[in-house]
Image (tube, rainbow, N blue to C red; front, side):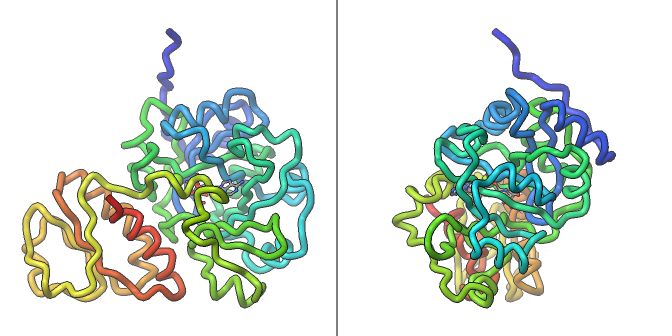
Length: 319
Ligand code: TXA
Ligand code: MG
């Protein structure tokens, strides 16, 4: 049987990363949201390799990353006015838009859908790599399927060593949770996944933006029905921290300080919502490294970035 082992190299050169991608190799690289596991969509075997490396179910479509308008036009059938307006305001950045796809874009990328999700990341390393490789790059989050997304290169290595060709040693991700996903294939923008570009911001440009009902999510955004963002530890969402007794085999992440912080096996207090988002997945992973049994996460109000944070927290807390 053919071995799927790959000799994983750590790299720091964007040109090398771009060249490897252009040759069909798998390269993990930083974006402002989370690390992505990249493969060029026009190279045979690269997209299959992504699914194999992650252990990702084939019915979960990938986001295509690009920088140049000319590459976007190669991938999508048309750019509707709603998409153009959102791109003008939020690209480059943590916003993914869903378009009708060009016929040549492999159904492996889109999990059989006739639409394709596209994002133009703001992270300068990601942009240099994409410019260097010149081709559209599919990149799901660079974690083993079912684990929390990786926001540091060390966490990518922890999950994907021996499964990808290279990992770019960039900085930790500024945003820390995955991009906002908006479907632009209908008559009005439809928010499929909350992220750092908030509903309020979307509506300031397109007041007609609607939110996908979670009951319909499985049909319209297949990725949302899979288990996501879950550490091994049991995640418990709490609103009143004072009721929680400290335990050495428990962790806590919160904005309100807890009176017995030192009593927890892992304790992370963040000063603001942005920090909560950027620290969350590394907190989950650290809890697993310490083999904690449970972790307490303080709930936040669901306005602004809080909507995305509560989406991830409540998914992680699902049993
Ligand atoms: O921030 C991010 O978006 C990161 C970085 C690496 O860019 N990527 C990421 O990819 O989070 P992934 O594969 O973990 O999540 C992709 C999401 C899934 O929820 C999937 O269902 C949705 O995008 N998606 C992809 N193509 C779609 C399509 N054609 N229609 C609807 N949803 C789609
Ligand atoms: Mg993911």
